Image 1 (cartoon, rainbow, N blue to C red):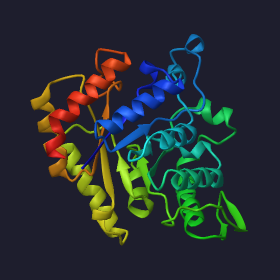
Image 2 (image 1 turned 135 degrees about the vertical axis):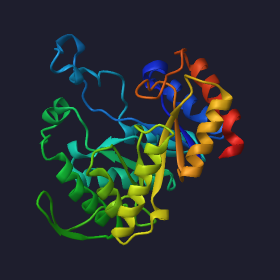
Image 3 (image 1 turned 90 degrees about the vertical axis):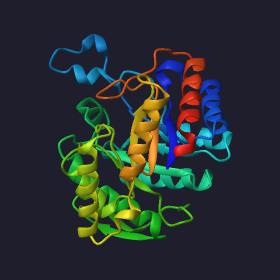
Image 4 (image 1 turned 30 degrees about the vertical axis):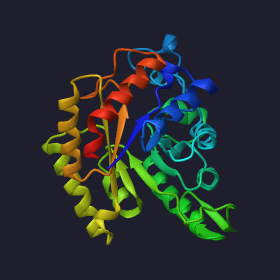
Length: 299
């Protein structure tokens, strides 16, 4: 299994030194990847009401993932990167394909594109995209991006996209950027089975519910004519609760369940996840160091 961590912007800030130091320390501690969240617009908490409070959730600091990971790829040598997740449905598809390809090339193939459909209508309105068809559009977006990565020139005519014998340059050396899906909607698993290289769920605790949904994904992947072993699974974990023995039991569970990637979050505080108490860079680095020391031999 690969071990990574989600960058804790809202605690450590987003200035260049902080971003660079976190990434370089993650690499020095022998983590495999850094994951970056995504929001373009955040609502004003002062204007939120009881009926639209979710519009204010994204009011924190979010660097543009492509800019951030391009910066970090130049500041590191081994660390790989992922978006967790890019809200692809609120963006122009060919532009995302181009940005992902450029990042893949400039980082030396160290990039996975994690995508999701988003939940916040405020962002879609501000970006002039349709919130209500975002899931259906995202299915076509996956096909368009994969075609643009694979071929120098593409002709595509779909419901939402038209490309007339055109292509992007550069393209990824492998002909593809690994495409991972976030989210837990009922349509997510069939999309992964058809087009995804992996799934990034964070809703399932280490219990039978996770085993059942992983088995469902494998069945759907087989039905789509693909090898389930070629589709990775990244689960999130946290270290704000419990201690070394608890973390080791959880890692052992996920490994036996077939997870390929584990993403440690030190700030996520939802469902079964708990953030750490401290908020300084020192606190976060101490937490990821302690966690890596506790579970490293199990990966």
